[in-house]
Length: 357
Image (spheres, helix red, strand yellow):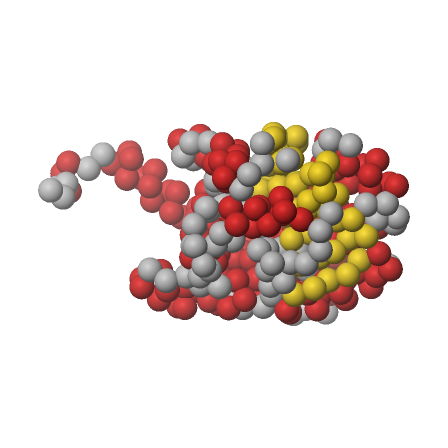
């Protein structure tokens, strides 16, 4: 039975409404974050220090009236500080790391492109969810693919070569001497290129079923000077070519696959006897209750509209989800035939796991 108005806890109601106001403001301001990126507003603030709206308008060539509103919205969001006496706005260095400096290990602004792509595809995603059907990765607006590249690149740059690969059993020595690597579900090949750059004696093969992503991966490898020891092919996780790989990697993609057990089974079949499989997956604890936090909130939301629909669009359609956690992923690896499975590293956003024969 629905509660009568007189039965409502007014304090709890105010808390709910307050959270809704916060969330609606965050959702609306996401568009402004991207506007700031695309028009160079964050970078201009980072370069100049305290500025008023007129100074920022002059520096960027944007009409001052727009700048005034944009600055106010960012100050209200806590992304800029405001000096009421001087009427100036400042981008603190901590916020600059997240919004203005795309080479920062914590640059997050690119992730808003992921959110933008969801809203572009929302009518189609809603229709598929309503029918219980999947929605393939390849069907999304192209902004999703560039947003994925931008969102994951900082974390991979900061952690992959320095901490994740050294945590694997003997892998760095193999890579230094010259190893054969498969990067499965490579997307735009950020991870592929980073490994190739760090270990020029190794050969790194990037595989993805999405042909447009493979085209971008080839471009990125050339831009980064890694074209000599990389190659990219359109192939699925269950039929990519080759054998005797010393390292097979899955970067934030295994949970998107319809048949992750089949994918890992193919990896086991194409892995060398003493090779390693590295799984980089979204950070999650093993129970729902432990994941009811800001990181879990973000990943459950992404899983609902991106990851799970992708899996449900494919054969088997396991729907592992972006918050599977170490225990569930270990069960998948065991079902694929791996006898050794362990966590080797983690960040606030990722689990790093190793599977071996």
